[in-house]
Length: 149
Image (cartoon, rainbow, N blue to C red; front, side, top):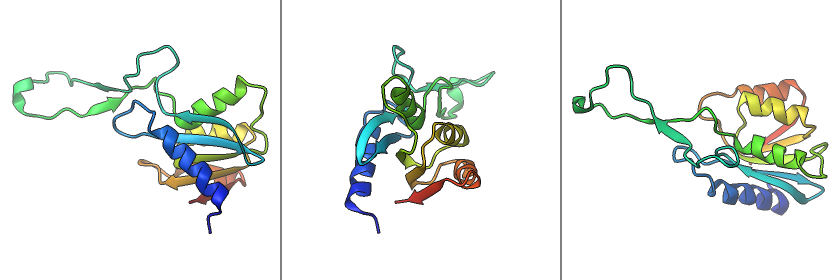
């Protein structure tokens, strides 16, 4: 059963996800230590960059009259919510050591590695990652606590 604190912190992550300028997927993260929020993050472009997270990629020989609909692709420079939250802790006097992270989407493998290396002890997540469960498998292999709420 999810307690009121876990629910409140996940709701905080969901609230900050709404600030993302991404159109395809908005993700939020909240880092908590001793029932105190020490950082938040959401997916988006690096500080000082334009907030355009997606771009249309035109394939070679594309003919606009062909009727083929082009889907926007996420730009490679986009930072994930977990990365942004951990980076904010790194710029503060706080530490991620023994903290928990609440993330609206299960972490990708790269974020999972960063979460583990930063000293976070438990990962709470809401929805599965769209492409892979590699991140969760990595965290389990590291012996970290993970919980879907």
